[in-house]
Image 1: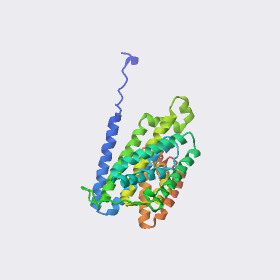
Image 2 (image 1 turned 45 degrees about the horizontal axis):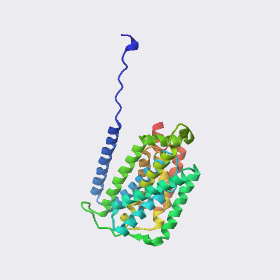
Image 3 (image 1 turned 120 degrees about the vertical axis):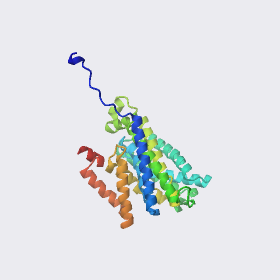
Image 4 (image 1 turned 180 degrees about the vertical axis):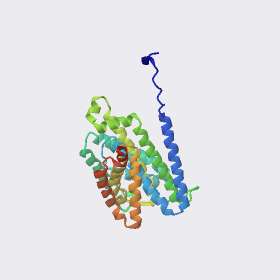
Length: 326
């Protein structure tokens, strides 16, 4: 037998996508269960609050990354979408007495439709013009809420919540577990997008949108899917907030810190990857909680600013990009 007819050496079989997805969901479930056990052993109610704060930003960062990280469209309207989810949950509670779970579903629908409409009107803009349009959206929504008496207007709205929800030890633990499930789902959606044709199309748009259009990529359709999905997840992140705090007002719901953190966390962790927003959110949110407890909450944005400066100068591709380069 000649060398030309020798069979090629067999390559090791690649791990099927189904097994990769199963590995993620099993690993995420194990980490989630471990977090609940650890916090129960600590036995401090503040642990549930701090964990909720970190997980809220995990959902927001993962949601922002779908449009900003994969497609390269920087969205400054994260606070507007999150507040839309919060006030949708308030309206459903006022009108029908719905608890947090129906509020989350309603927030996903309303914020997703808002994302679709916003994308249809603004995605023909590029660069800084798109970013300014999303920032204006947040300002317009805040003005509407301030003048809407049904949700309390500028005074804010109160939510009467139960003391506990069996089998959870406290309502704080219940809301933490709800946000933990939402974080696992949001990161899983981001991971699925990255590994799908949608993700590859969005990355082509980010690299060169005109070239992507020239080779037949349906750029507008993909961007509309991304804005809808991103908006829905941001709304989902905001829906539990009034139930956890028991009160919400426009100043807190439309806080600029949400928009700044949503951009900073994926950039620091590694934008355009599913794991980067998780790393950035856990790192920054934990530092902010530590600063709030030990010094002052006024340092939160100061910490974000310095972290951004350091990473832009030393690791412009984020933590993941820095490790991959090494």
